[in-house]
Amino acid sequence: MAEHQTILCGQAMARPIVIALAALASLSGCASAPHGGGDTSKLQRIQHLVVIYAENHSFDNLYGLFPGANGISRATPEQMTQLDHDGSPLRELIVFGRDGKPDPAFPRMPNRPFRIDAPPVSRPPTTLVPSPIHDYFYNQEQINGGRNNMFAALSQVGGWTMGHYDGSQFKLWKWAQEYTLADNFFQAAFGGSYLNHQWLICACTPAFANAPASMRVRLDSSGKLEKKPGSPSANVGAAQIYSSGLGGQATTDGWSVNTTQPPYQPSGVPPAADGPRTHAGEKGGMLGSFNLGLPLPPQTAPTIGDRLSAKGVSWAWYAGGWDAALADGVQPPGAPRKVIYHRGEGSPNFQPHHQPFNYFARFAPGPPIAPGICAMATRSWRRSAPARCRRCRSTSPPAG
Image (cartoon, rainbow, N blue to C red; front, side, top):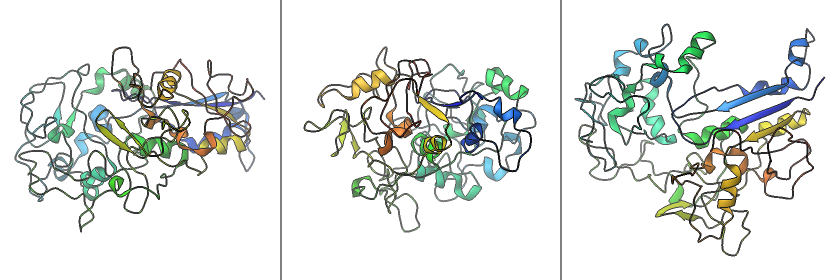
């Protein structure tokens, strides 16, 4: 039987597309026959399994109008009607701008789902639109025990969270018609990219026992995000929360749940002046005027890569733009970043927090390994790791 290779592709640039999610739990089947006997000929024909991980859209945002799906038409009046912080229905849906105040560029709309690509909003899918916050603690309050009626109140863009597209114009919609649409698939963890990437490869939440108080969430006596005095009604403006910016990366008991930087380059945290260039500075760092806090301590939990290696399955993690981001990351700490979290012309705007293997001690920077193990990774940059357990990048996939 030919050697099998599993390829994990991370699409780290936040872009408006969702391609596919595959269940990693089944990957070990590529290497050995399943228990209980039976015909294994079909499994043995599998040569490669590719997982493309994309993000940043809800099901209803793209497929809410898909015929027969559990979409917008099946939402209850309670779920459609967004509530204010005091539990009363919002008078209307208001889109907030960066200042937390109503954005005059968007109309005020009735308190119910609306089409983004139809009047009165009329923003086609090719248009850059507001990006709702996706945060571990916000998300729990937005879901509100399954009622899903606090999204507008607990988002920095307000009522924009209730918008959706007519997805029939997308190629993804055509694929859904031809194949299978998982209309009851839910993300692994509350919140955004960072924690869900960790669950993709580890099915675990990273430990951050030494997280400083400045990076731990502030919750009120009811366990909700603590609001600042004078935080307004969602009929007026965006909620004012203490745990925004630096703050809220970790739970009160030391688990990392919101975007935290990796301990190795490429990282948003630059190297320390007196430390190795391949590592993020242990005392943290700044991204422009934004304090990124401390990098996450190297993690030690087993990953899907370890499980594949234990079964003799070679594998690779691909991240387009990796070489450029690595070169950017190992610069002297005072050098300006031109690739990592940088939107300049020609930059891939590389997102280090979308590279989950870069948080694990097992894949720490080290000498190159013997060639050929990750043969499918074009011009791969490799890190030392146990035999057949490799982390690679390629310049071929989308940047990120």
